[in-house]
Image (tube, rainbow, N blue to C red; front, side):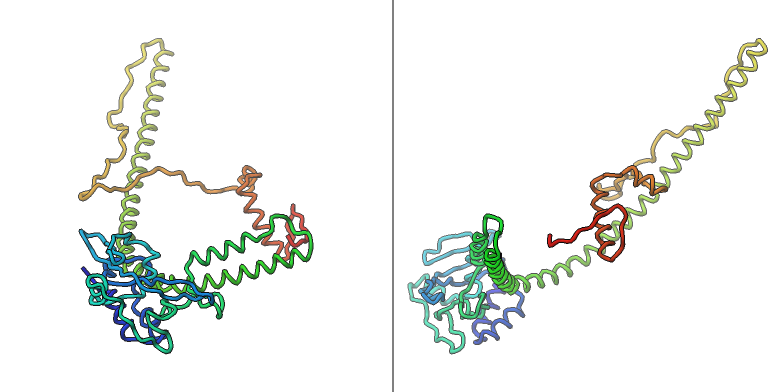
Length: 361
């Protein structure tokens, strides 16, 4: 069982005192913030909060949380009664991930019934018994303005944005006053959207960068193998196509030889009949062999995967005018022509067979 990430988070909470230092330290670690894994097993606590009149959260207490591996499965125990809850609960993890505690503290609270130890608040950020538990552990405050220091989740942003969307008028705009009002609503939506986008990126972009690094590392050998497999497939297909064409050519040559043989025998029979004689027995050329079997199937020396030999039809256009006439009126062709015409007209060109107009929409 690994406690690596838990130990790293404990070290950050113990060694760094300011928001800037903790943010930098946690970002440098590049450890999981989305869902717990085996590397995150350890001991944490979840702040129990209430919202005050000024919009800030006040910590009323904490619930102990423990993650461990049992029968190769990640297990989560929650609360003083250590009841088992969903170990993949992302909402719970988002709270406790920044609140690691030592095993000694966990044992004292859960097993010995002792209260949570009080910690002296830092003059800059406070510690876990400060007003804002997220700020206490160096998490960025995700807010839409400087005065509302409220930690918001994605669900909070969705709720606020959906509330604004619900204000959209149900009928068409009929006056400048209505237009001004909906434009104000648009700007409010844009403000929320930009703030939510910024808040979200602060969380998922570090994870995405880590994903890209890991993906690049792991995909390199995979690509080497994939490219080699494709090269093998191509080589086998070239060989099989050559064999297919050989068989086709041999069949064509044999068919022509058989046709010539039949024609010779027919001419010999016709001449005999003209002479009043019995037609002679047809002459059979024993050297003519008509190949009817396809190239022998390839059986790999290892495994069962082989090359898919699909006979395809490849088309080459030799007369664009005739092809265009055939597909005249086809919706896909019309869409392409529309795009090309709009592009040419925007460049100041005149396109025959089109009309233009001016308008806002």
